[in-house]
Image (cartoon, rainbow over all chains, first blue to last red):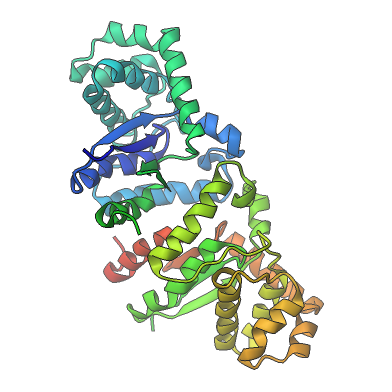
Length: 200
Length: 200
């Protein structure tokens, strides 16, 4: 069994969404699994001195035009959310919580959160909003609300983010395949070439 | 005649080099011309608060691995230069100087500078180094040295950079095609799709 592809993302990142739509299918074409890792990108930004693109002169207007244009090219829904960047703590903690017992469910929740936030333009900033997105997947509201307030879960997300940074992750999306790092939704075609050729 | 593609780049940017190798052929496939615009990226960085990638934690090591890997994929030479980021003032001024009388020669010089710097790993930081790169193209050394010290030429590059920033340019490479902005060497396939389909 070949090792899985590591897919790091921040829910508040539109490019994370645009990659999340493609990454599983891309990997499946090369008989690879994908491990999804929500991270708190703000922690990486502290290392690199980056600021959220949206609030950066010149880059902000570019992003707001580019992300929906990129989505149209992929044929996926895109709606600008009311709050950007969203507070992704609750959503990320919920995924980290589920990951322990049921990684497949954690991934389904991550996809649902991305779709709600960037596909439908819903805010994901509060635990209640995340619980609402999770409910149709059979995830119990009370259990989720308890989990995202649990210090052990908070710590687990913090540690997962720190581990990602130690592996060199500084952006969203960020893909590690066989030790090779690829940053950005626009690099997935290089990821695909890497998988197809076994490197170059 | 369809309007030309506007190609903005910074000589000190390896991704500018990687795009410069492809942009003319790409445009020619769609019967388009390309206007090359060297800019002083530092001026845009003042607007966006960006720092040179190379001196940014996490991003620096990524860049140094990614740029040569990208070059291998394209099958083009890549040698890490001794000084990064290079001082690109003299090279950019020389191009701006030639642009007035002979845009084709300005483009040939730009290609020669990119090749010397990123293909062969030569420094381009001094007027003398630029003059050496320019000599095989029949560009007279004394004339070039005078031009890059000419206040009018200095002003022209400054103004060209300011004009680029006013058009939203903040990175290298940066491509404007029919009013649409595409940032990054990894976006050239989107530029190509845009040209092939006339938008999407």
